[in-house]
Length: 133
Image 1 (cartoon, one colour):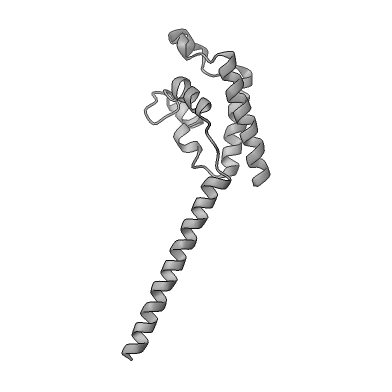
Image 2 (cartoon, rainbow, N blue to C red):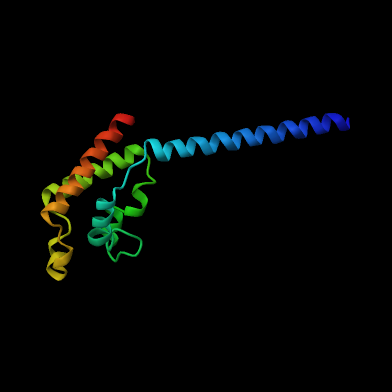
């Protein structure tokens, strides 16, 4: 009876070990292979121009409802595609940052170069992720 208990205990340990290995491998593959990449140039623009409103510390609830940069990379790929398309649309319309904010803080206005960088990143990211989902 004791021997049977030891065998069952050993099988349980091996089973939990394999399950743990499998779960870790899946989560790593998901985040590295199909996750949204945030290049340094894009991240710098976001930090300097967007993060003040679209983060947990932002003052505008409306901005937080639309987009939270910290949550973007943890969304599933289909949600990321939706957000990237929305970002591209807002950039093409010149709607971000809002005119009222630019009046108060002109340094937050996106330059033409920054707009191109962000638009290209959003478009390529949405396209790449769309093919994977």
